[in-house]
Length: 276
Image 1 (spheres, rainbow, N blue to C red):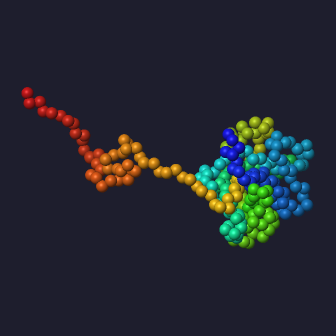
Image 2: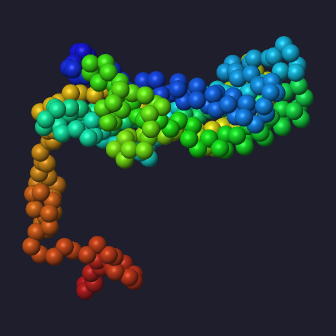
Image 3: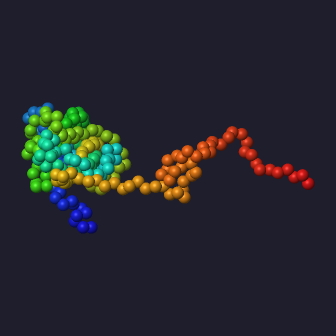
């Protein structure tokens, strides 16, 4: 495959290439910030991604956050046609030439496995209950302006400003990136046992969460616009059409179509009386 078939000339880097890792980091940061806010000076739990981790200190509390699956969201699937990217929303394209095209974002579901470890089973269950309540409040796990990387390497938001996630988000033309997580029932006990066995980890009570994200691809600078070529609609095969249809499949003004409804009653048999 040639290089031009993979990346269009003048295209930028993938704007959403780091979003998956940023969501995982946001979950871990949300847990740590929540512990500091609700538990004050108490020693925070340790965040781990290795399922077979066993703490040396029995008093140590551990929260496991492990992304075990990602899947394409078919319910939000778009056609892969180029369309104008929502960037430089307040500029006049005829004057500035800031016209960029990209393909629709890829909608992906991220699935996380969340578990806890404590000194005693009861302490682990208390930590698990607190964690469920905390993650239920994660309605805005990520709430920031959407990032676009231009072909020249600049990172901007939809208004064309240098990207800064701490800028105010009160502008109606500002495109925002919103990510939250929700509890789902994605793994059965048998699936979890197989997963723990693969990681050589012991079985622990677990929770599964789902986060939905949008991954943006490269931008194409097209100050003069772009042309989308669509194949011409072909005519139907005349050998396969009926007498009440035209070549393009539309109904004709000929004789009415025969009814396909089978009359009620007994089937008629073609019998002939033997007069000899």
